[in-house]
Length: 539
Image 1 (cartoon, rainbow, N blue to C red):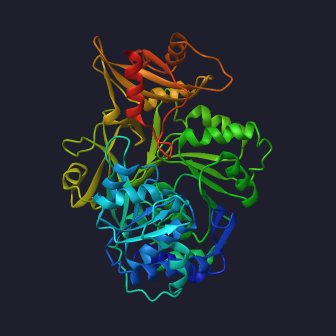
Image 2: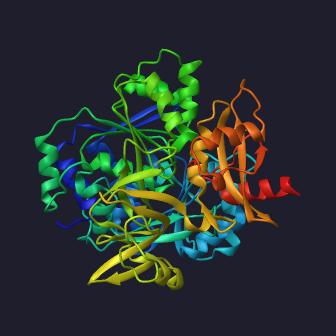
Image 3: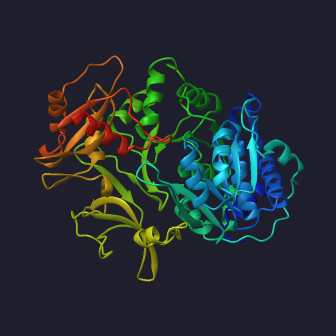
């Protein structure tokens, strides 16, 4: 047995076959809950894997998952891994041109899609001739264009529930497409062994990684159950899918919803006694706070042990508001990326005035991007990670050469995040270098200013961007969504508030109030939108 995700999953199934593995609340096919044990999920994935093989999809070929959260999503990922087919996530918010780009760039030969997306898939199909197998989940609308697609349920029914697959390898690939708000998406190519260690913590994200593949099932057999993981962000983003696999590696239960609805999330936390929630920053935590202060007041969240965020920060102010409502919960700002997996967790003293401070793992450093040597204490550099890193970007040798390098016989990945490191090795993340604002020769990183803005009592959400300025080159602009029922602060009031936490050159010189902040489906910042809105307002 190797560090192959399908092998590892099957080893867990064999020691806890009757334990509940996956619960889909409000499953669209049944209108009710759908619950599967580990043995049932394994058999369901086997059925799809055999059907894919019987349909002519071969090891190493790429299958796209154009789906909302659901049993079918994780079932299909597992099926791909079992059959040595490469799963590729598809952002369900993409429209025709973006889908054509991704389908082509990823060399998809098969696609599993939700019926709701039939029209978009149909529009993209004439320009994606390599797609030779379509599998549709659910029933399309009566007026939807006809597509030569297999019905998922019918296809699954004829597949064998047994295993009987050829031997797999830790070299088998898993591709995670990332990006889209700062450029066209890129496919990060992971060997499964590398992803197991960097993205899934080697079977023990908070403890000692396993030293041999067989040890994973031995740990599951020796432990108990009682942990329920609830990834609330879309599975199409790597973080949620990896969270589900972390749960599988522990032999524990995963709960999912088709979409993020705050009131439903809270009901599920109470009903299913959820212990661990993963989400994406303030954009998802704030609506939970609003619901707990409003229609869901009194919801029993006492089972909740941890809430973790990756991809966007839970700001200090918002964390404090949630902590006041759920006192026993631990709130974790995790730092990582599709290119590196997990790098570390924010320190307790992170926040306005001190920055986003990370206690990083031993494989993470801040380096000079020109020499790849570690930077001196207090000097800015870029975050890099060594060891179990991806092979590169699919179909993009240029970006691969820019991002991945070899040093001292080890493979490294150079992230886009700028940072400094202190005497204790704690890393302060400054922000994405591409979003850095140069104003009068000083560098301003939006995330730091956003944290200060969101600590204002009338500010619900905020993004910060640079706008061209004749005097300063660029000035700092704040695009702000106000709290409902609150006040309407002026630019002077915002500046006065920020001066208690930020140096003068970081203070916003422009304030744009908008009805809502635009973010990606996972809650990540859309800085192109913020820059456009601020530039338009400055004219």
